[in-house]
Length: 442
Picture 1: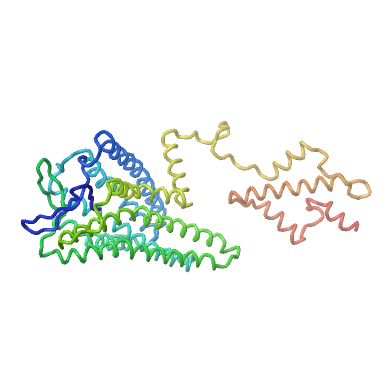
Picture 2: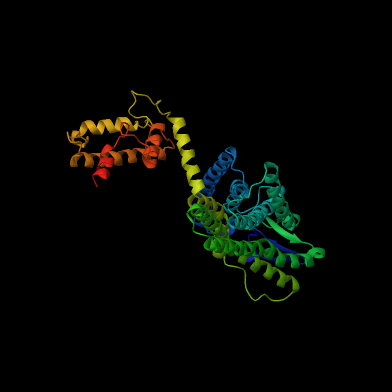
């Protein structure tokens, strides 16, 4: 974004009749000892935390891709996190260093590429969010058909996004140059007279094409996707898919809303400053003065904080990313302190083997002898065995549920319940004769 402030926000070079304005705030416009130290410190905290969270999200995405979870939505989320990482790693350090100094001393090459690079990353994030909205709507419309692409196609979509983003920001690179003043050197955007008409159209079309159109497109498609989630059938087999689609839509919608809110002040400053510069070039008196320093500075901080907010939204609202974060933390913990191997002499093993149902039933029978059935001389069942048998049957069911949770179905348990349901048990092999005897007595 263009950085404008104070008395040098716009300046007209009458000798060459050029449209020239400063793009950055320097320490000359910040109060010494206050904002000059506070602003770089805040940017440093945002940079460190943002890089950590973005790297975590990227590692989780690589881990999912390694397990075969390749999809268009995951590749676009990776592209968003990658753009945030580039902003934090390359754009923010130069900006923080310039805030603490009164002159631009990092060279002509950085002046030409600094603002262009930041604008390209922000435009790439905007185009990525718009593409995410379309992919999310396709997934919600037909969840059974995952929006999956091949590894080669994964590289094509981000490449096309970055190509468009870097192309629409070329004027930011083309007209950026260094300008020497009395006591310092500043980086300005200087437009020659032959390109003035083009820039007057560009400064009006650029916000529409990079901010308004992509985010409006994304909001419309996210609203349609959420409405589609509400209209879906609530059958038992589709309930989990419906919940997953709704959570995905809410997460991506939150990313869009965060970008629209945090990026809006910077665009207000951007349009404000260029309107003043255009009026001064035409010789007219602008209706508004230069934007306040506090507004310009807050807009820049909110723009950079977006690179920290995006991974926080993804890691907090996505169940897949939360599970991946737990798994990543578990692997890092196990690498530092490897767990002991499970064994019979290790009471702290991670997962002890489940006991066989017969063993559990025998132990229960030994602990409560009254629960075992007894049959009198006349062959009539006693009341106590019936209660004990019910408890034993319920215990067997509990054991079966535990084994099913672990994904294990024991053959003898399966045969027991199958014969009991079909009624193919004989008198000799009937493990619960009191139930049949009670039926015969009735």
